[in-house]
Image (tube, rainbow, N blue to C red; front, side):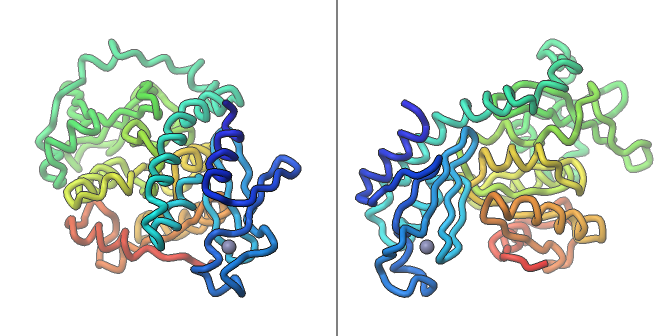
Length: 323
Ligand SMILES: [Zn+2]
C-alpha cells in the first residue's frame, strides 16, 4: 500500500471527511474545538491540508496555524484533549516506523547520501580496534558508562581520544568524532574517516520512531542531554542530535523532518549559538513545529555544563520564537 493511501485510510477511519486534491489531502481541522482561532467547534472550510511525501506528512491548518511534519503529532494533540484518540496515536507511530526506512531510502536516491558513501567506506572492521572502550574522561564530563554504551562510544588509545560514532538511522557507520581527553591536547576535536559533517546528525542511530528532536551543537552536549532525558524517563518523547557545530545544513534539516514530530533548537548560549539558532529556526519552522530552548536561562552555556534538572527545565520551557 502506498504511504498516501495508508494516511488516507487512517483519516477516513477517524471519521474525518477527506477530500483529495491536487497532490494534497484536506480535512476539516479536528483541532477546531480546542483552538480559539477557529470561530466554531466545527471547521466548515476544510482548513487542514495534508501532503504526504516520502520523508514526511506535512500537516498545516491555515486557520489555527497547527503545523507538523508527521501525522502522529496531530493525533497526539487530539489525544491530549481526548484520550479516546490514544489507539490512533499508536497506530500512526507504527505506520511511521514502517515508512521511516522507505523515507531514508528515498533521500538516498535523491542523492543526499551519495557523496560520502562514495568517498568514505567505513566498515565495522575499521571500527573494531576502537570499539567497546570507555574513557574515564567521559565520567569527568558527567557522562556515565551506561550512556557511553548506549551511544556505542569507543576510544583511540594511541592518540587518547574518545570516539563517538557517526551512524545513520539504520546504524550504518560513516565516521567518528574524536574528542581529546585533555584540554591541553590540540586539536580538541578530530574527525575520523573524513566524513562530511553537514550530511549527518550525530545520534541518528538511536532514533527508531518519530519523536521531538532536540538539536544541540556538540557531541558531548548531545550525550549529556540524552542521559538526563533517559534518567527522567522521557526517552519515548525526546531524542537528541548534534549538528556538529552551530550552523545547520539543509541536509540535516531534511533528516530532522524525516524523524521529528517537532523540533527544539538548543544551541550554545553564545553569539555563534544565537546566529545558528536564527538560521536553524528560519529553515526548520517551515517544516515542523519549531521551538527554541534557552540554556542561558539556567545560567549555563551548553548542556555539557548542565545538571540533569537544568537540562529538563530548559527543554520543557522551550518556546515558540519570533526573530
Ligand atoms: Zn485548525
